[in-house]
Image (tube, rainbow, N blue to C red; front, side):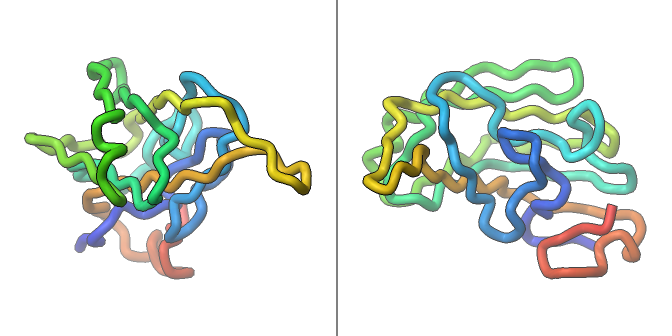
Length: 155
């Protein structure tokens, strides 16, 4: 059984909070290199009984705030990808030549560079919103762990 997109509930956002279901939207209040998405379990791991087939990232905002990404699966680090050229496109995506498998109980960390300066709104609100959607499929072993609210996993 599979989903057509990764379940947001399997991941945490840059501040360690559960990912916003269905939108993948995050509020960035600090510029610079930082964790953007990580596994939802202790040690940034994917929960037991789930596997992720990951083939890219989508950035559905018109204005892009992430200029570079890199990630780590378990103890393997992957190189940096410069995203600045894609800022010319409307709602771009990065699709990998070869997909990656994120096994259950494997740590996953996606880092990015958030460009500054971080704006302050007229009401004093500080930050900029960015949606970063993981493209892929979530495979699960036990259907009872995915029944619940739309886009949420019971883990």
